[in-house]
Image (cartoon, rainbow, N blue to C red; front, top):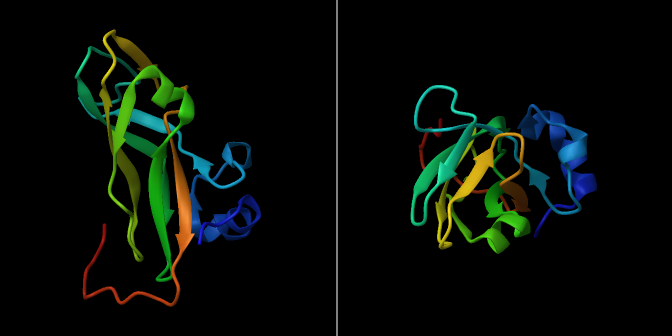
Length: 137
C-alpha cells in the first residue's frame, strides 16, 4: 500500500531527515539533488546520449521495519529521455538516497541540482519484515 501525502507528513520527522513540506506530492516526496557523484560537490552536469551518472539526494531516509521506499523518475524527466535505476530501500535503511540516471535520448541533457529528477514513494508492508541481521547504512 502506498502512503498518501498526509501519512508521509505525519511521519516526516521520523522518516525523512531534511523534510521540506513544499516537496511533498500527493503520493510521493520529491527528492532534492545534493550532487552528481563524479567528484566533490558537482551541482550540474551535461549527459551525452547513453551517459550515466549517480545522483545523491540531500535527504536521508530512516525506514522503520514496516516501510519501504521506491525511487521513481519524475514524468518530466521521462519525457526528456532519461531512465532511472535505483534499489528498493528496505525496512531498516537509514541512508541518503542514491540512484543512477541514463540519457537514452539522442541529444545532450543538462541537469542541475536545483531541478527535480526523482521522487520517493513510501510503501507500507503488511506486517513487519525481519532484518535478517543486516545492518543498512
